[in-house]
Length: 399
Image 1 (cartoon, rainbow, N blue to C red):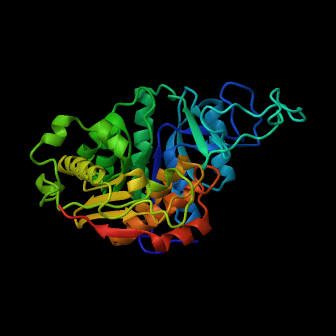
Image 2: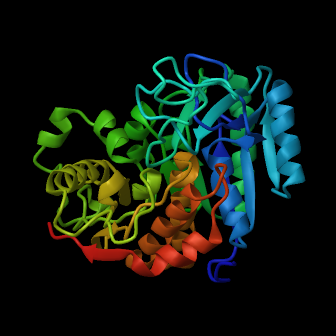
Image 3: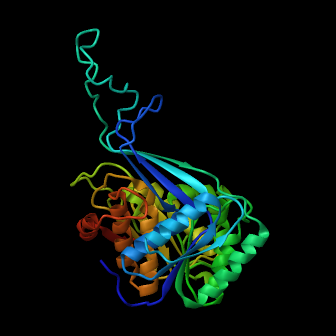
């Protein structure tokens, strides 16, 4: 699979909190006992790295930038090299973090006891053997454990910025995503977006908390929170502001333009069930209304477009051209940890290729779904992508 040749140029990804991602796959995890791990995956991670992997698989030129230090940082750099992903990582003194994902494809029901020892005899009441497998739940479960990351010094950030400014000259777009390590100011993503904009390079920011709330000041081309992140970043006072909803007038004039929605992170969970819609236009009115209001606040404060993942309610995009919602035809079972990053990769492709927003959202949503079907973050299942894409509905959303 390859993307269009339109919008040629390297897509720069920024991962300040680079990680060595470890994924354990184990069946029927007993959180109070000993478990056998069926398979282990270790690879470079962090949201920007995952975005770069998806873009590279789609045929785009990418460059991974960020901070790396210690044994974990060296292992991540070695993995990027082995994967053929170009990287320009700024060295730091502290050690890069590790993350752990525990994926259980066949989990026990909540409250169920684990299976007894293999070869056990009948239970004491004579009803079932001790090694009888308990019933499984309908879908897989994934638990994530994320370390906070290394403390970064001001001098190390200055080194990173010098390299970042140089590399913007060859960039078609920049994706700035993930958490900030300790020592990095909350407004740093806004600064990176502003530097990119000053060089004529559009930026996508995918962040949470204070970095998300500060990001509009850098006037990024796209902000991509999910619904929970959006709610955390905005106060009740923000949402009560008279201009906190989409209206005419873009960031250039200080007011948001006519807004609109889309879908893609809806694939983050649930079992794949054909015929069970994951979102129907007109349903989930409150989440859509809240997302529209929150997106309006971020656009009022400087973001050009805002794309909100709504879980089972799909995706909402509020842009200068209008507002759209993308709804998935059904849910896909699997590991959701890289779904949002694959979605962002799709948005980046659409940005550099100039794809119309409805088509941009449809492809981004399909990539998010296809990432859920892949075993580790940063990959996506091409068959799932091709199967889901035609069934995604993208409908305009009125003010």
